[in-house]
Amino acid sequence: MAGGLSALLVFLLGWVFRNFDSRLETQSKAMQELSTAQAVTNAQLATLSQQLSDVPGLTRQMAEIKVQTDRNTQDIHELQTVRRLK
Image (cartoon, rainbow, N blue to C red):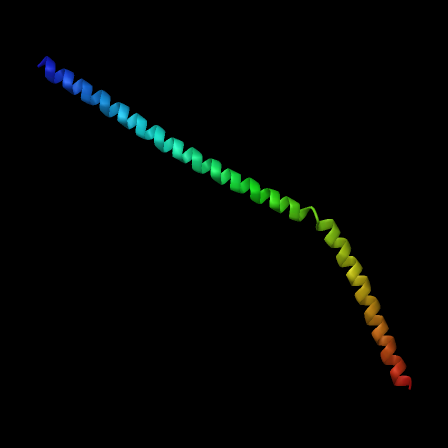
């Protein structure tokens, strides 16, 4: 009887240890995946920040292009007027 109880106790301790070890391994894998996802997110944020840092420059360029387009439109209109006078 004592041998059976000892065997049962050893079995239960082994089962608990194996179950605990399995959970630790699963948690370790999840932490590695989380770490990888965080690194990817950080890289994407850095790229996005770099792209957004040039928005004021793009706004200035758009204003310059708008002014140039207005000048070109006015010049074209003047040329068309001169051609009609000939």
